[in-house]
Image 1 (tube, rainbow, N blue to C red):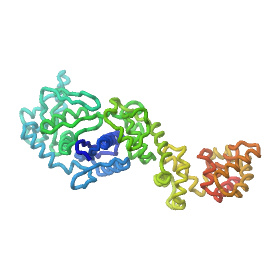
Image 2: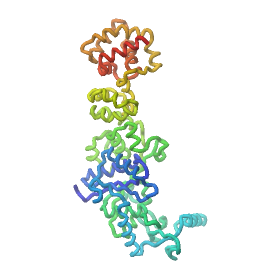
Image 3: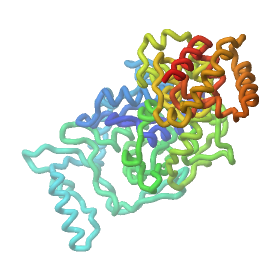
Image 4: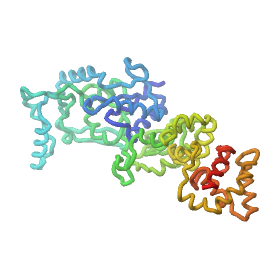
Length: 476
């Protein structure tokens, strides 16, 4: 693996992995795999008040579910890593000391309230809100806890060539002196990220464009520490259907939520890669095709809109493409969540469950829908929908069931093809449409009048169970 290209995904463990974060991880992973580079995972957990181990586990579980593997970690954690910033505090303190010795930082005892008051006063006087901190000239106030603040040059401009957005720059008059170490000694995001990216030899920083305003501060830190500046690529944000930033009011937003709703990881990855990236008109991609074709130059500059209907379509596509046995294995927790106990599942062998999965996936969008629709096949008692019964288990409907029942019971071999031939012949002989004979049977064996094709369902149930259910319906 080449060491020339190195990227990282660096989430903060303050909640579940948002789909926007997952897309950022995916773009970093694809960029590294395309170039045979290195993909690093770093947990930025210095916000100790909000970071939790539960959130860290959720992020790692989501990345593993998406099959986004990382390449290295700290020596203490082994190759599986990931890096954790709280384990690197000595490195941040050493780099802060270097900046202090170079005169690039100063201790600051101003409170947030004092700084806000100065900002409001400047705005009221129609002056630029940026003002030099008094501590920079007079020194810190004795007896107060001191943070360490970076001295931004008063004049000049910091600019860079963004891989996605092109030329971007900020005048220093727009950038306040910023804290690098809090009074409690914990590093602030911009400082810790720069130290880590420099020491990990990150060549490309690929992240959301909400970080654009952080970039000039980070470039100033690279320069002050004497480190080369990586290339920056800021990905546009993901919007909801109302074109506001995707949030919980739009529905599910975390990878874990979509996993629990019954979406497949391959569908999720395929959907996320297309949220801002394109390769011609192609919509579905294998993992190898994504790696082959992905480049940052094909990432758009404008925000992408999350389209739930398109995700549903993609997930249905991947459901139908999945290996039936693997699909049945993924369905087990959803069958349990729908009400089946272990005994009911164990009573059916794995090949039979795979046939059920293959049949019921055709009309479904999610694993949860497949599980819910196929429940009647596992249960002894048929819960008949009253509306379906009123439409199809009429006296005429029950009479037709009773007439065909002996022939169903006598049919050998009991196959979908044989059943279909029998039903078509009897419908024609009795002057009926096939649906007039099939629908009472469907309601009798499943309890509903909408389902996958009836005759494969009867074959799956087997002769004895199909006859039992049909006979029970004739006596209701």
